Amino acid sequence: MKPEQILKNFQLKITNARIKVLELFQRHQFALSQPFLEKNLEGIDRVTLYRTLNTFKDMGVIHKVLDDTYTLKYALCSDLCYSKNSHHEHKHIHFQCVQCNKTTCLDINIPAINLPEGYLATEYHFFIKGICKNCNDSSYPNT
Amino acid sequence: MKPEQILKNFQLKITNARIKVLELFQRHQFALSQPFLEKNLEGIDRVTLYRTLNTFKDMGVIHKVLDDTYTLKYALCSDLCYSKNSHHEHKHIHFQCVQCNKTTCLDINIPAINLPEGYLATEYHFFIKGICKNCNDSSYPNT
DNA sequence: CTGTGTGCAAACACTTTGCAGGTGT
DNA sequence: ACACCTGCAAAGTGTTTGCACACAG
Image (cartoon, rainbow over all chains, first blue to last red; front, side, top):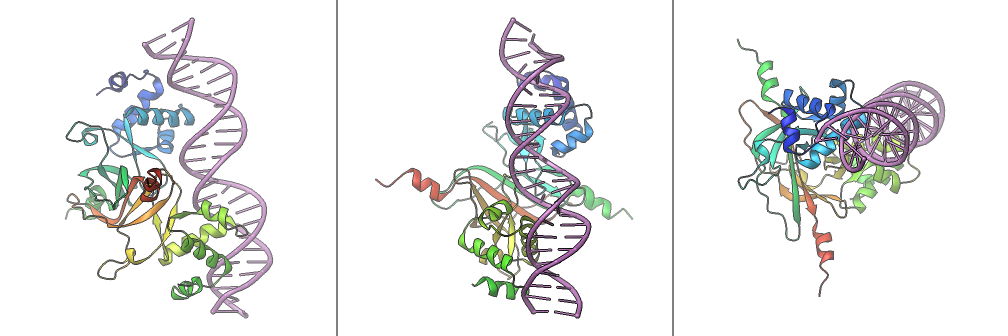
């Protein structure tokens, strides 16, 4: 979908910065951080990027992706973000590759957990560190 | 166990800073961050704390606890950190309370996940956000 | 005595806030 | 026209590095 259309769907004003940010998300299948955006989108202010990401997150255009780099990352919401009852939520597992340093969304749901009596859950975050398919494949070149 | 004994067990030099840090960990059942240690341990340099935490983590005295605050947290390793085959690893779930802002270790193992072909896992991080037992109990006082 | 631990200064990286001016609708 | 978006400056917070001195073993 065209960035302009996405913005329209979410009733967000169509601005240069937002289009550029969405395009960048669409060009990459992995989660993006503000520093990454800043490097790859010269001409757009650092603060604007932070605010754009925040707005997108609040409106449900993107969702937080946590890994252990302690830099906020986000990924475009997709089918993965909708459960069977068409309720927008984020219960899939993320994968952080220690080789290419990319964190991606896996098409695997977070398994249900029985919390001890008295606990109330609102959000689940599950990520796995390791070597992703791409890096794994390229380290064993075809013979 | 006495902090001195712990240090001895891990073949670490017994210093004032390390004892103080271990004592603080023992006094709290939740994960501690460097900023927290800094506030609660006046007289010990900020950098020393970072380095102490790093050393402890490398030696397996403490383990990383991730939540979405983007501040590194650590917890003392305990029985939870040893799997059935007495192999030191960290596969339990953490819980981040949005009310008291404490992140704790749960006595629940991370369920096994079947990764897609080609992926290789080395670490699992799973945390749940919500309201912990303590906060939940205190918001519904006994009648 | 020797190597490791500590403290201080400084730099680095990521994120947030305030305000003035610009722009989409 | 008006509200919202953007850019700039500055500050806040968490973390790392370099170097000289101190101290545990």
